[in-house]
Image (tube, rainbow, N blue to C red; front, side):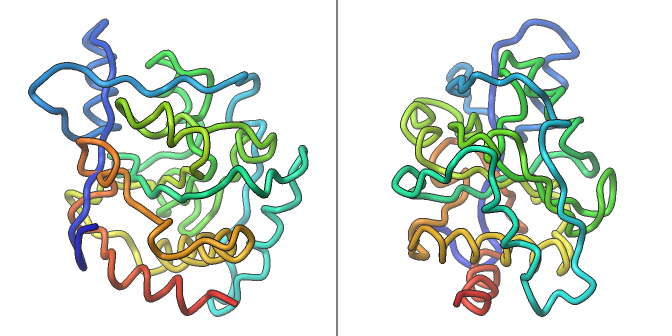
Length: 226
């Protein structure tokens, strides 16, 4: 894995129209010179972002309290399934689950590909956590690009931070809230630091961006672990 403030983001899709290419560029960040990568499709994906729920930012970031509500899912938690957490960025300075879902659908996915989206104050609250329908229904994700996606989308929890980590640092509040979420998931599924990876560790992207403070983030996560 990369150190301190280095990391990576992006994804890739077939070229169909100018608008689609623009969407890919915003969401993904970088492509390899050799050809397009596809997300592994995961479904069924009915609903859309409205099928998820949002956890508002905490009045005090010192306690993760409301994060525990993520385990009140519509389908029983699949304890043995989730073996990894993958951190992404959206690749755009602003937005929310509806915007990301629209982009994902334009790529041929069946709904929001991430299990969770964490806001940066532009498009959704800073530190607001959107719990997507894939998590609530305990469905595979559609967030790891390329050949690795077939494996990792089945067993990894996808978390997307709104923002472009290649151009601008994430806010302390957004990182704290994400760390609380990751810590709660690690505690529930008995995951180690090595089980929390960046999209760039699995695919030729830069997500969650070179400005993602990996070492400091993992320290935050450790501080919130039980």
